[in-house]
Each structure stands twice: as C-alpha cells, then as structure tokens.
Length: 285
Image (cartoon, rainbow, N blue to C red; front, top):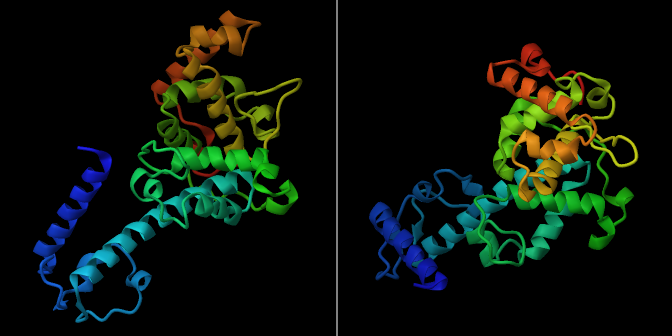
C-alpha cells in the first residue's frame, strides 16, 4: 500500500471513529446535531469560530473542523519549539515562524501536517524539535541567506528556559539521539561542574575553541553548541566512548582527560547534584 493510500485509509478510519462518537454518518449529508466539545476537547473552541453547543453540523463541516484542529495543533507545537530556540540564540521568533510558514505553504503542506517536517524533503520526524534547532541556528549564523542582517533579527531578551542544566541536557540529548550522562560528564570535566570561568564568564561549558575559547550569549546556547559539536564531529563519526573521543577532543593530555571525564561520569551516575539542583536556582545565564 503506497503512502497516499495509507493516508486516505487513516482519514477514513478517523472519520468513521467520529461517526461512532458523534452520530455523524458519512452517508448523510444533511445536518445533524452534535456536541462541538467532543471534537475540540483539547483545543480552544475559538480556534474554529463561534459555535454553539447545539450547532447542527454536516459530515463535511465535521471533516473541515478535524483538519483545522490538526493544523492548529501542529502550529502550536511548532511555535513552542521556535520560541525556545529563538530565545536561546537571541533572534526574533517571528522571523523563524515566517520562514517556516513560507516553507510549508502557510502551514498546510503534507509534510508539515503528517511528517512533522518543515522542509521540502519527505523524511518523517517524531516532532519538530531537531529541524527547528538547526533552522534557528542557521538563521543566526547566516541571516543573509534568508534576506536579513543580524541586527534586524536580534532579540536581546534573556532566554526563558524553566529547566535545570541536567533537565535541558536530558531533553536535548533525546532530540539529538545521544547519551545525556556521556554528554554531561564531558561538560562537567571541562567546566568544573559548570562553576569555572569558562562556563560562568564565557557560557562555554564544553570549552569549545578555534584560536581561542569561544564565548556564547548565554549558558543554554553554549550547552547547545557543545552538544551539537559532540554529535556532529565525534559521535556521528564513530567516537562513541571517551577513549576514542579523547584523541581528537584533547590531543594533549589524553590520558588525563579520559581519567577526568570518567571520574565525572561516575560521580553523575552516583547521584552528584549540579549547583542549580542544590540551590534550585540558576546563578548565571
């Protein structure tokens, strides 16, 4: 069965389910009374206009409402991710949403509605997080490719991330498909459990550098960049343990680095808390 036929079949199953729940039959085109709350139980009724609970709706009316609800749910989930990563990279979320809207034919493309996909390929994603992270990062790095200058899209407000460091690393690790304790151990080894100046002054807990150590706008951006560096330049290239990673990550003092990271890893596994978990507050951003 090809993809198009599967979607049609799923649509028919969903509509038949509503026949059972609401009494609306696909064979009846005349309006019948249904309770709109059964369709919009998890969504604000206002998304679909002004409906009274005794409104009489036809089969086609119900179909339109279902499709609109699916679309609005997707837009809401997409926007939440856009807001988070836009705030981390310090760019205007409206710019990111505009790019996504253009790429998805005003949020109506098949890819957007069924594949959680904001691009033009046909790959299926579990959610929007990974793509939006890469899109926001690319807009931040290359705004001219999207018709902007960096000063036009910059948003200087502090990120509104209501998480501990560990929670953020756990969430981002799931998105990237990496081991969170593996990642956290490296950051802790490089930054003295996030309390050395490389983290507190430069927001660079993974100690990334070219000719000198990098500085980032906030801690969350430094964590994100460090994790992307590990995934793209090490883990995806076969460096999946500290020994294989050390030769490239820390070519000078390899044995010491391996010992240091292993020590941090064991402490994390044995329940060591980070400073923001002890204090229940983030002392720097």
